Length: 252
Image (cartoon, rainbow, N blue to C red; front, side):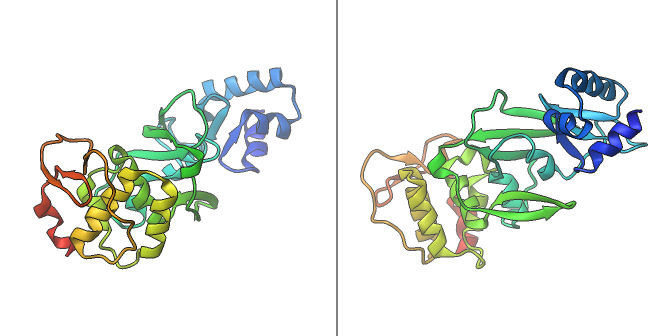
């Protein structure tokens, strides 16, 4: 009976929701709950979070087999986009490999951190005006949304703590594949003065021709808010240069 139920579920893919199971099996919600509990206990499926599951292939051990981590991440929020450091690495904009999969959403979530099949996921909620610039990719026959290269840069300048290291984001700006006009447009759409200033300083330092807004006034902000704010002040962009600027020399 268990294998038959799994075969029915597998027709819709390797991941599914409680509602999917109820619809596919044609059972009541109560019966669906009982059947899913039995399948979890028999290590036939793994619970991703409340109401969401993954089918474990025969012969695989629970917690050791997994789909591509981005496919799993796509199940954790609606709407969603794989973003920040995860997207930065996917697009080849950093060699640093993240140990966490970062998922962006506009929805309220009960949990931000998830441990699924031994993988760590972090769900970040953002304002709706900042949710744009996604592209579709295909992984293991599944469509996954991920922020495009330019949006990834802007997101990392907005929430530096999810970017790995700001130096890597700065170095990524020197990638010739980036559309500088799109970068400027995305920075304006983001609406954050901090993003505009960080982009302005880093691109000016590297001599990259990005249509930048006029220098802004206001209090100084750190270039990297995740480390000590001690550093030289740049009066044009009103940023505190609190990173080792020598690491950015290769941008030029």
